[in-house]
Length: 300
Image (tube, one colour):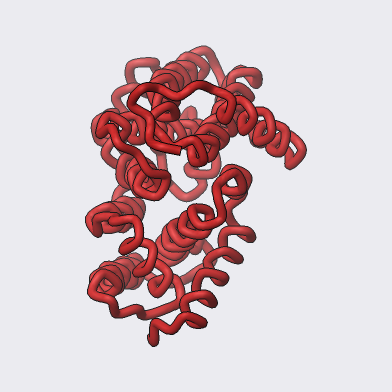
């Protein structure tokens, strides 16, 4: 694909449209970024969407082997992109973004590994296994975004990782029912056993004290990661910190709704309305931009 100026602009526009159409919670956070960084983030989102769509179309009759092969092809497309050879508009824009913001290729390869794991692994024995999965599909995305946001202190990376873990753990708690329909159980097996809740109970939609205790435990863990994740903000440049602040708060609100529903995610779909998302975005944007900078923060 020819890397002409008009072709690159068209590639960026395609990524923007994908993000606007599909991003949901992420879209509201991206709106707080300066135009150049917002454009770059939309490319990252479009790449992640491309990976997910390649593996997770539930209407497809394709075999697992076919989907795995498609993800292997994405690995090749990534290598070509880093060599300056774009195979599609998304990869053309990705080439430009990775060069501008010096994003390591292995971050994107980790994302592909995380998406592939959904095709070959549907149970997690303990939290260490689950954490590795969450790192690949969420924390690494945070590390990529960190390159775009800009930072100086390497400690920012640890907090970006934890914010990604917190958000993915919130997703897991919210989507227990939907994931089960795809024969996926992300709740750690040893923790289910510890609280006396079985997969048979889960399939029967039983919400009892063991289930509530199990889900409360998941929520408390997510809160701990949120506490660390939000410590990322002072390390970021003035113009970038609102994006992760808004995104984190949107997921915190989802977690609060899970708690207020007494953790019954099997009979209630927890979500935020569009007005609620806009309210969170406005309040968090204002608060994050007025907050004082940590001594280790990036330059405005």
